[in-house]
Length: 359
Image (tube, rainbow, N blue to C red):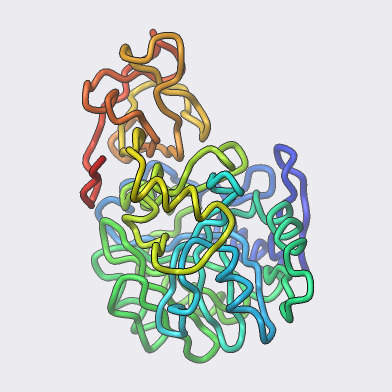
């Protein structure tokens, strides 16, 4: 059974059985979305140092199937779908004709299906728009949230814990494996990190096997781990805001410059080979009390009267304040003086990413 609601104008889907199960585990909901498991401060600290078990029901799955699935998706997305198989997942952007990202997907294979994971807040609009391009291709697109749910495990012992619970664990970043109806993907992160996708009944059994060995946490903590890993995201507030390179998507493996055409490919390629990239995504920290939101502006003295950057994602930090990802003018980042919200706003300090960012 699928539960539907309208939050901030975006239709979202949640598996009702999974939601009820998480409530029985102590999940605290806001607007019918899991936020935490009654102790958010402790959960954030656990994510930084220990093992955590994270609900990921803020993410949705689009299922693509049919004889033309690979060729259809390869003609729409920034990565090469010919390289996607049952043992690897990949990131990819779906861009507008102007090269701006409408959405970022995590793609993986599960049997004969290709699954595209994205924020639930983008599911309805993305699925509706993507279907418009199917035309005569032999491919069907629908959401799979009624059949599959997602959760994650992260921490120093995550690989062992997953192996003990499921009998296997991928060993390389973006490695993907499916056994006994459970799909596991190894993700980048400050600690070993895995996402598990399974039918609700299998997910419940796996969660029960792990819950006493890892601290249950809500999706915001997992999003903090994404921030620490430098993994970009696109949500309704930032859809069509960035060319993939601005958000470092090519650095984290989400763009293939040797594949054929896709919407916006000409602009993305020109930016890579002929243009001079003026903005990059940086990790930063903000010590204010106001919660930074995706799409919030960042200002700098070298861009008087106008925005010098945009928040991509932000979450509460285990060390107080907020950790965030933001696309910022390279010149402003190099100058080092940044302010959130206005030219006189509180300071934003840059922090290191786990990979090298070059202009």
